[in-house]
Length: 520
Image (cartoon, rainbow, N blue to C red; front, top):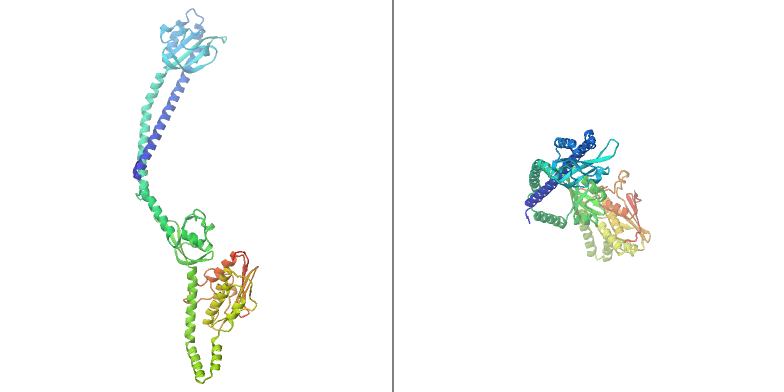
């Protein structure tokens, strides 16, 4: 009916105020009527009992003409008490007193049996004067015998008149209350309109739908945490990045977010582009304080997936290192070509082939890897790729002869081994050695990666698996301190173990055990 929000709110509130006021008025009128009635009941009962107990009235019952004595007293009491009538009867209900003297000597028109039986009657009856509220009490002689009845009443019209006298004041108060209610409704309507920026319901619904569509449609994860540390909003991308299957809105942030994200949400200052781990995902997180009217009401975290970017950055670092190595080897390679050219000019082809095999440096690593990991093509491919990268950087990757892969190692093992080999290759210098032991069986996978680098200091071994902690700080390198953190997450999820010791080669030795879980 009313399309505008302001008009609808005002009309609804005014209707509620008027209905409430009218209901309250009717209830107040009913209560006032009941109070008037109760007051008259008490008065009539008191007057009736007084008349019945007057010694003069009781003594008059034994006189030859009781009415001559009782009628004047009854009229006097009637006028003094402002009641409609005071009637006194004998044992048979014949009147000795009545406001209309002509009725004296007649029997009462209503049933006197209740009072004449010794009980008190209070109620509404219709008599010769009209419908009235009356009280009837027995008149007893000195010896206790019931000798008559005293009846005192007031017309119902008089009760209505008394109520009508009180109604104007009540109506004034109700009208004032209704006016205040209407003004309050108008004020509330204006306040609501300001709070809703004077938007109509359809506009608010459209704005909400648009906001939800935008938040759930963007490719960045959005997590909103209110000032009570409860999740107010988690969009679809954030649920994917955090590995959630059900909307966690309303839950405590501590029960949903990982420690890194929780610490970021609890920080005081806004943060930009901080690397965090959520499960086994590398995320870039931003923290912004959400404010309303200048007051902080929570924080907003935006999340971007950087797991693949992390691998690409590590590859970039490796390529930078390879480039530097190639520059250093450029002159040496020219010398190798000159030697080969000279041997060919001297027609010493066998010596040239021998020289080429000696300086090529490929060795038997390819065959060793294929033989040691022939049960898992993915593992063999990984080791071949790492071996090639290490060779380009002038580093020798060896496969321990005790390696044995009876079954496929699984994706978790590939993730752990790849990160451990990358860290070992990063740790050693040109000409260094990295040794890999892999043993995969039905019970689980054991991986040991040794290097001849500087190793890991005892003071760092307790925190080397924390996000952002690295034993090697290379200027211009990206994504340091993430690989070992991912290793720790995988080991924890698989209920495995990881140990850091000194290697026989002189550097660090990482020993990882991943028990079989049935899910490869």
